[in-house]
Amino acid sequence: MNNFINSNSNSSASKNYDATLSKTFVSNVFSWMALALLVSGVFAFYFGTSAEMLRYIYNGAGGMTIFGYVSIFAPFILVMVMGMRFQKLSYGSLVLIFGLFSALMGISLSSIFVIYKLASIASVFIITAGTFGAMALLGYTTKTDLTHFGSILYMALIGIIIASIANYFMQSARMDYIISIIGVLIFTGLTAYDVQKIKRIGQGLEYGDVTANKLVIMGALSLYLDFINLFLFMLRIFGNRK
Image 1 (cartoon, one colour):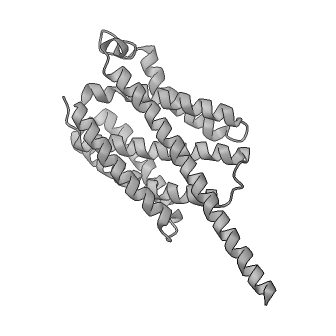
Image 2 (image 1 turned 180 degrees about the vertical axis):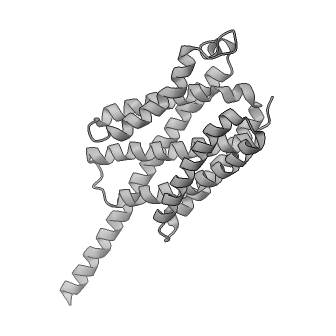
Image 3 (image 1 turned 90 degrees about the vertical axis):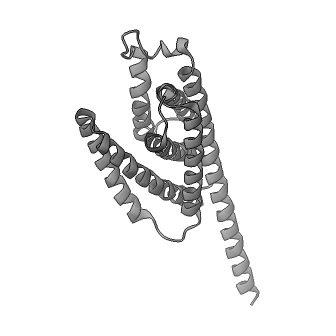
C-alpha cells in the first residue's frame, strides 16, 4: 500500500515538474520574441521616421541603396544560417545572430512608416497582438493535436509565396488582397501550431542545458516570424496609406 502511495506521489511530482519546466521554457521563448520585436520596432521607427536615416536605404533617384538591399535580403540569410547551423553554433553566437536579424528586420520594415499612417500602423499592431495572443493561448491550452494542420499550413504557405512572386510581375491589386487574406489565415493557424510545438519541446527538456537555451532562441524566431508576417498581411488589408 505504501509503495502504491509513494508511486502515485512520485508520478504526481514528476508531472508537476514537467509542467513547470514547460511553462518556464515557453515563458522564455515569449520573452526573447518580445525583446526581438522591441528591437525591430525601435530600428523601424528610427529609420522610418527620419529623412536622414532613410537616405541610407533609398537613393535620390527613388531606388534602393546597397545598404537597403542588404537590410532586405540579409535577414533571410541569417534565418537559414540559424536553421542549418543550429547544432554547430554556440548559444552566444545564436543570440548575436538573432539580435542582428531583429535589427535588420526592423530596418527593412521601416518603409511601412513611409507608406502607412502612424495611427494606422499602431491600430493594426494592436489588432495583430490580440489575434496572436488569442491563437497562442489556443495552441497552448488545446488538447487537439495540431501536427496535421501544421503540415497543411506550411504547404499553403509555399503556395502563397509562389503566388506572391507571380503577382510581383502581374501587379494585380485584387490578387494582392486575396493573398493577404490567405496569409492572415495561414499565420493565424501557424501561431497556434508553433506554440503547441514549443510547449511540447519544453516538456521534454532538462532546463539549463545549452541545447535547451538554443531551442529557446529558435522558438522565439518561429513566433517572431509568425507575428511579423501576420502583422504585415493585416497591414496590407486594414492599413491606411498616406
